Amino acid sequence: MEHMEKVHILDHPLLQHKLCILRDENTGVKDFREVVSEIATLMCYEATRDLPLADVEIKTPVATSTFKQLAGKKLAIVPVLRAGLGMVDGILPLIPPAKVGHIGLYRDPATLEPVEYYCKMPGDIAERDVIILDPMLATGGSASAAIQFIKNYDVKHIKLMNIIAAPQGIERVHKDHPDVDIYVAAVDEKLNDHGYIVPGLGDAGDRIFGTK
Ligand code: PRP
Ligand code: URA
Image (tube, rainbow, N blue to C red):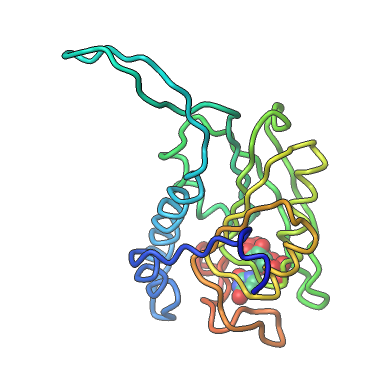
């Protein structure tokens, strides 16, 4: 795959193990939901590795010294409804002050084009760095539309976090938005005729919310 410097494949053993649980068709709703959230936590740890730090002086019970604390812009996370909602609870404990925006998109099953049905962003979104959350990056249509949507709010720095991607999805997002860093736990083989990732994990929204 080209443009590898913008694509971060997070292949930590814990992530690979937890992904097996998601992929297994016998995993039920409760476990699926819990593991999506756990994976989001582990991915957030990596996706925030480049956050800027600034010196701070702290007096411990023993001595005063200089340490590092987070600096720079505040963060917002934006789950793509529905399936992205499953990642929110895993992320917020790591970055509790983050605000949460929502974008509702569904893929038209015939055209595979994203259709927008809801949007609510924090009022100060333009002053924040944004991490978009969606477990699946298939054709890339939904992610590309979500990124463009957030760029329209004048957000300058956007990251995309997906649990499983198809190569086509990564290529599409990179072509449309070469400035966006993409964090994925796995890049699968291909898409099938219905636009599902193969081998993938099925329909993420249905498996998180039990709507199949
Ligand atoms: C899924 C998934 C992504 C999209 C990926 O959502 O959560 O948003 O498909 O496909 P794409 O890369 O080809 O656009 P879906 O449209 O099934 O909606 P849902 O989350 O409400 O189930
Ligand atoms: N959306 C999903 O939920 N799963 C896929 O495999 C592709 C798109």
